[in-house]
Image 1 (cartoon, rainbow, N blue to C red):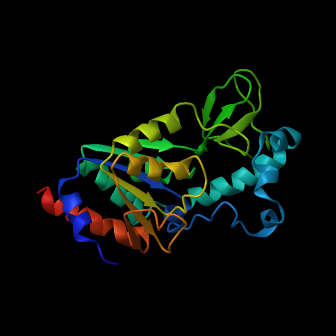
Image 2: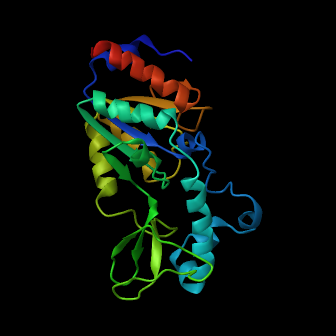
Length: 247
């Protein structure tokens, strides 16, 4: 992997960065991709579980699946890529991290300004009164959690098929993308909209677009620079360049 002279020069003076992360950055921590679950769940399509109608038909089954996914997340830890982004936030004056991931690893690593486009699997809320609930426990005796205030069904705070993104989150992401000098797209193929439109929003406003991925993607030909490799190895190198100019 070679970092261009232009990118090195930009890193030495950059004041505003927007980052978009996808499943690839979490895969380096051992988080299986949405469609990569083995065993029982491989026989069911995600679309059959991750939608509101499926939840209302069989909340026990949906919660069993999400409890399985939550356990996977609990058992992994942030990797060097997550920590590099924490450091990047400390070094740059204006920084926004936009993620398509629901695994909470960015917050666990220490990132503060994070926009979660698809929610957070470690949060839940009541479908009736909207009350947010932390640390929901699903057991063999209590397979479907209910709200302590109104007894409504509790659901995971993730965006399901057919649902809108959280109010205001994508708007904030678009604003950050349109105002940054450098836009990093990390571990995502950037083909799922509306998130896929953020790199081009940034580029249309004059930002330098850098893709970090283990292999070329459908947007590789449209970005300014592609850095092939694991995010956990590439990002620390970018941080080193930044730190050297900010001593």
